[in-house]
Image 1: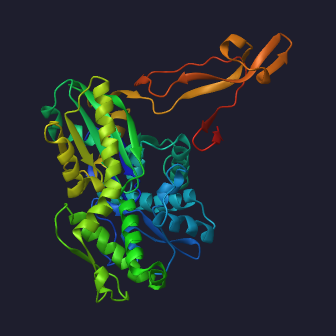
Image 2 (image 1 turned 30 degrees about the vertical axis):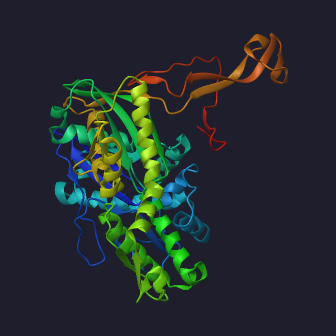
Image 3 (image 1 turned 45 degrees about the horizontal axis):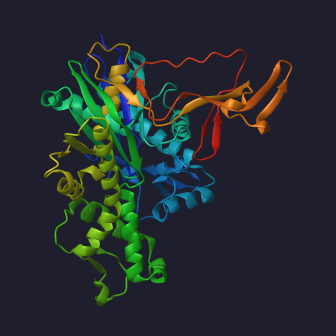
Length: 486
């Protein structure tokens, strides 16, 4: 009898998704009946990653948040969990500024949001499995994180999840790896693959774009290994929104724009996000958005509260972000080729990965003489949470299915320990580091690298370190000059 429920959570910058399955049955349930302000339920694969507050306490979340209301609301706060990624201005800055007014950290807001998301997830499962489901089943939760995140950002995410009431033994998996599992495991995609084939998974999300390249090493069961070190950047769809807002400020005037009602600006941005951004495919159509209260200016295409967006302008706005994605994809293709693994296909997943224009740009660049297929995966928007659930099923102690695993990865960071060693000038030790001990001279604080960035790491491989005394273990992120001791 099945005894474990596996829940996969895609905690995204702009939207989040949840799916779950019972081990042994392995049918994935995707939550799509998210609550909405009209008293019913939506039928969307994801729910907005947004939360509002009243008197310092959570008020609403997801579709229930009144984006046109005056209550303090947080969006894009996920990016603030990683100091390296929290460099955006404009829209991201608004959430950072709000933190101070409510005396909250990004981790606090993430915990509040995840608590509400988790509460609804459990209610959803109860409606299907009954009120006693938590007594019948054990629980495994797999949470996804951007592949480019630092160890500190991952630790903050875990702390927020545990504060939110999720189980202590949460598993983390990178977003593109989860997406790859969903694409390869579902729909019999493995029947289209051959051993030796290599492909890129390009996860275009709201905040980050993450890429991983894999080589097929086995088909029964399906086995893959990384053939190029993963890459990524802060060039998700939220930065297209930022570029659009900045352009509007330019044609309207910053002072005039600042005097407009927040509700009017929120309505304009929603029209851009839900209409223009999703429909644009590089065509010559003139799009419009409504900005109530804006002063007419025919030379800028502003008339009767409507702003016209010329095709050339829209292309410039899109290319500002998509050009960065192109660089990332090119780099993965080139690196894989340098490693002797020519890429056969690029699989686009994530919300921004469904963009017709993103697909068109990549196809124009690689789909011709290059012979690389550019594919938008079916169900690509929810692939990450489904893949997280599949990863949990693989890890399940009760699972009797053949594992579909990533057999080897390429290290994105270097890991090592810092200790004192016998002083040896021939090894580059400096006099300034010399320490006198009863048994001789030592060089202090020398790094002993256990894993070097770019190393091939086989799944399950253990790294052993023998020490003769108690040590304090910590993480130091050279990019942020911060450490976290455990």
